[in-house]
Image (cartoon, rainbow, N blue to C red; front, side):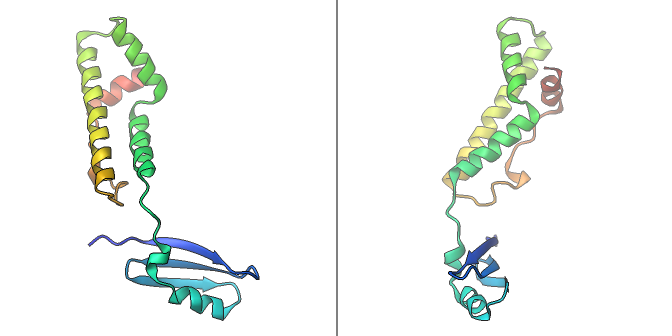
Amino acid sequence: MNQTILKARFTNRDHTSAEVITKDDGPVLASSERDPEFWSAVLAAKPTAFRVPFDPLMVKAECQRRIYAVVDQIAQVNLAAAAAGLVLTEEQMAVYRAGLAWIASMRTVCGSLIAASDRTFSDDRHWPAPDASIVALAEAF
């Protein structure tokens, strides 16, 4: 069972603040600067009050981060220009096409995670690993 674990900071009118860490089944830890009543009120809050809405843009950002970690924007532009200019060898062209297929598979995973509102989108197990040849070609450009 996956549990959502969130950390939130609350501040009341007199600027007393409390930090709460919650799981799906309720608060598990709270600390307050000086107001025990405020601390108790925060602990009594329902866990749904702490749930952050699922954000598809976070999944897209994770996908982009993972792609750019292998082949950044400059390398992508340089590789596209080299492919269009027929500068790549046949072997490099095959690896370039494999890289494009890898990027397409990353985007497919991204779409699936968004459709499922999967909060575990940052887990490595979701994302396909690029072949070493793709990484090597990207590093050359």
